[in-house]
Length: 182
Image 1: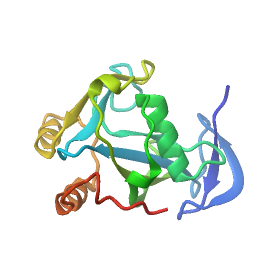
Image 2: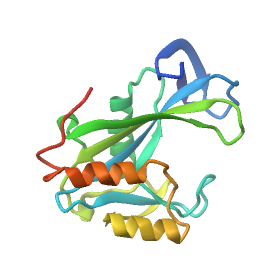
Image 3: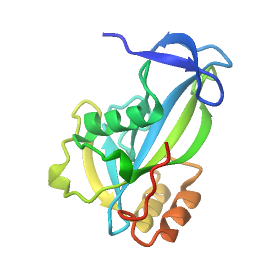
Image 4: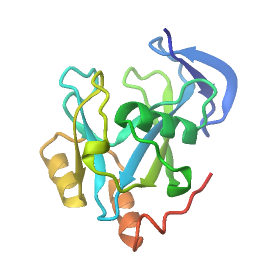
């Protein structure tokens, strides 16, 4: 079954037009995408590893994420992606919209309007159910481990990591002090 995206403006607002995933987008078109960082009370982030056969960044470590389907806002997409890829249900009141930015598609046509979410959750890895069509491993990783993975060239590069880590260091208790921002 085809997947459809809302065509958005540069701020992530739907324009009323829809795009079928897999078809090239046009210059100036945007679709909504999410990245979801899940942080536990030890300050570690839940990462999954892409399949070795993945089209983009094969066998790289990353936080969960993906594209919003038509009709979804960024929070709904973030909650769905985590449920689908990790089998976890996040509490929206334990999350915050950390950052918004635009990123070009690899083909130079169209853009993704990314919403980066930060959630707090304490859960054992045994509670995570990986989606076998997308991921092959998982781990809780601290900032030092993520920086090592970046140096090794096996972590999806995010330009805002210094900002994310500084923001997280400012929070004394990530589970109790993470405000929800709609």
